[in-house]
Length: 274
Image 1 (cartoon, rainbow, N blue to C red):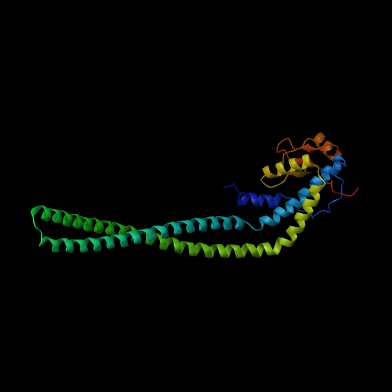
Image 2: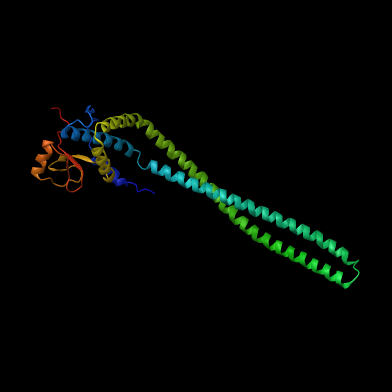
């Protein structure tokens, strides 16, 4: 199972993610823009994606809980199906053993009636052997029926417990789904709009930078790949940035990453109108 963000990580993401309003994505021709334009587009994309993250975080662990319950229910259903087949098989075996006993008892009566009309010792001994065999067959069947009956009772008990658990988990799943659907219904319109803006922002960023952005974002616990300088420090890892490096960042002439966390750095005023 894929690794999942902890609750504290999600809270960190909410606290640290930029909280500006969704920026209007400027239309920039892909591949024909300055470094400043590229940095601005990347930061716009980050702001939008952070708002999408915040919306999804409000769902908490519900999606994971729903997924876990669905997996558990699938496992329970498989277990119930297997035990149901085993129960049926045991019932069939008990039925067959009982039929075998009936057949053996019929043969015993037949052989006993034939003993009164035997003509020699060889025929008598042969009938005695058949009688002994059928009696042993009955004993074996009775033993097997006893064993099967005990197994059947145990498997029925497990089956009943599994069915009760399945019913309980199914109700839990329905409740969790209803709760999740309610949250999604409240935010899906806003999320859809933000995702559309995210796609629009991604379209103006060249493939190399977009790939780097996604890689950094996926590796960052709070989803921040592009951060601004805050109080002379990286807005992602909060390590201090030397004055000369801050000056280079403000000039917006090259893509600069944090030496400590690898996030792309921009100045706080990059989205201000010229």
